[in-house]
Length: 66
Image (cartoon, rainbow, N blue to C red; front, side, top):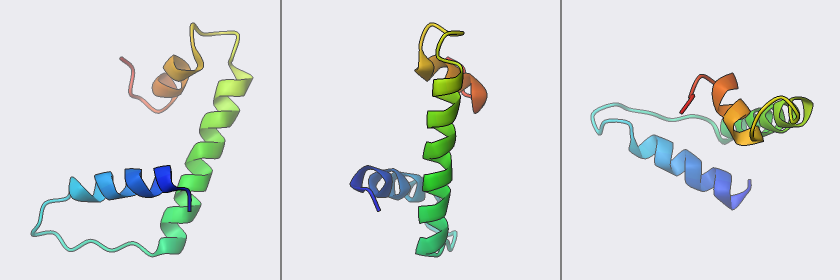
């Protein structure tokens, strides 16, 4: 798996409270990361002329508007 994706997964896991037991199979995290990155690439490409930047469209698409 890409080092950047592994770092993001680690950061997300760190946000889980210590008292919560959490374990996802590596296959799940790899597939989820692949699907997420592909969707981001697709929506950025498809909508590249509709927005000021691809990043702003990706944020809006996933509900994280600035």
